[in-house]
Length: 148
Image 1: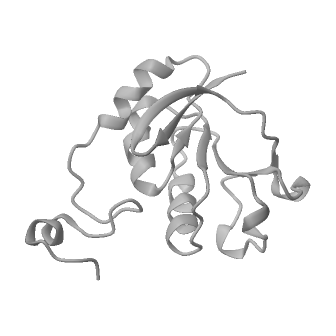
Image 2: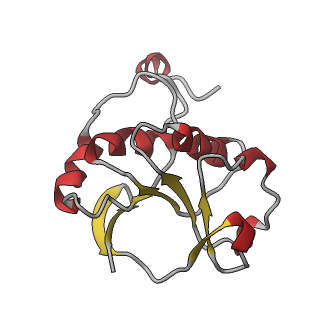
């Protein structure tokens, strides 16, 4: 079983991947994890989200950024609060930005060190704009203002 990185109470932890079945949308059944591909439109999902074990978003190539948008939409527009996992061509340099988009677990590519990938989560100490984990831009945080 492969290893993955999970964020637990804001801390990164390396774990064995769980045995939850993760299947594409057309094969999904209650209790399964849902695998979304880059072409899946998350805004048209009509699922009972309470029955979804986790949502995994596939990155078929590190150059394909559609998964970032899918994650952000799931968190911000659809209110998904369950586990959101990045899978596929997931590399260290992407983890910090993936976290800002709402991912809270990462299945790092098999030929890469998961321990080394942890360093990617510390990539950006300050993010200027809004994100799924911090909706206030930096200037509002510095001014001590609440979110809009």
